[in-house]
Length: 499
Image (tube, rainbow, N blue to C red; front, side, top):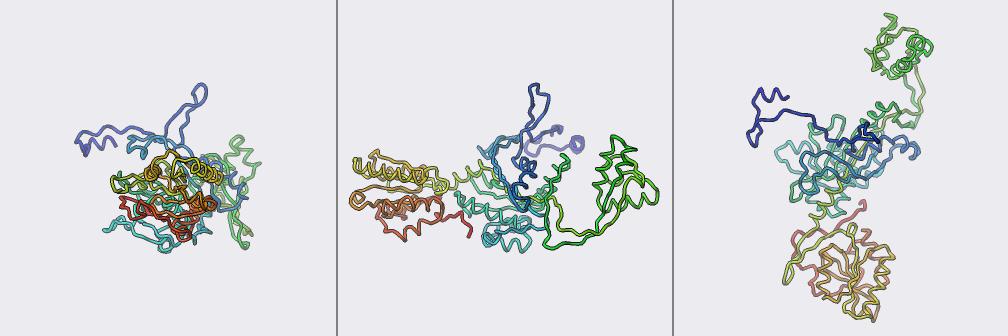
């Protein structure tokens, strides 16, 4: 390659300088293992391979049935040439991956119907090379039926990825799923999509969802010489004609001695087509070299060393190497995009106020409790409410500083707390408090005994603020409710539940 670059006097496009000679570069970090450092190892570039290595055990734990999935989260390491863009391109990052093992001939999914009607921006391969070059809002069902998405299982994980991203605060209108072009696809992949999010850095790949076929398990089986298969039982027995290979241990051992196991392994790895060719050559010539028919090495066998016959068999099932559908999440990138998408500025009467619009699901603090006045009777009730919230598993901040209620609201809006409870004079009379929602600034009046249950449902996204408002009386607010002008605010509607 270097010689060709010099031959045609290729120059660097940006600077016009000569291009340096090519040199080897490994994207994996090398390290030395052991007290003497005489064994070389590599830091893992992805978490997935640990799951593949343990496939036999995982299959056993699942009752030896397909389909099933395993998930793992941890650190991965890649020797990036030029780390940049903050936490978006780094050499060490947190990765979460799911390996969903399926029958390669049946990639349907039992929960596909729950996401089939989800609409998302799909940037398919055909659209990317067309004149339009814009993602199209498409139902997953339509994309699968049209063959744009390869199968139901891949579509299911695309739909669940979309729901997850929206639930953690990514804006749906600034998120697209881009299909890999043919030259981007790994040689073994059947289909691959990236969830890309628009940020100030441009479109950032945050999740990859790929149909990796059976390549990983086949590669591990070949290297380890261990079975990486699963047994699929047929609904009804099938009668098939297949090649039966029976090596003669006695004859092979007599001639090849220490190499006998290698020869027998090579014979057992014969495909049906090559087995029939080998049989024909043995019958015509009386001997044949295995090298021409399999990866068994340069061994010449005779007709008496192996029996090759086509036999009809009744099969109740078959052994397969499962295919894999893999969603892979870059946690650091998702976190950054979430921060950028949920940040906005609310225009106040005297000054602009910054807000993090975290969804209740991911907000570190779910609720704040404020006594309206700095008095012990208000503080005592606030402490009691806070303890009840904590007992319900809701992380809570209690603020008894006595600062004006408006400033306390603004202070907690800045750190993304979605709900605020205020203890006021009415609380002392009838045990009701005000509950405020951060993004709309609207408030309701609710009995303090109902608070933990209602907030638990809001935080778990089992209900919405609109439904809570319809159930409880509204509380007038000096903030002006939802009439505030906001820049970049995220929609309040989100759900992690399948439709």
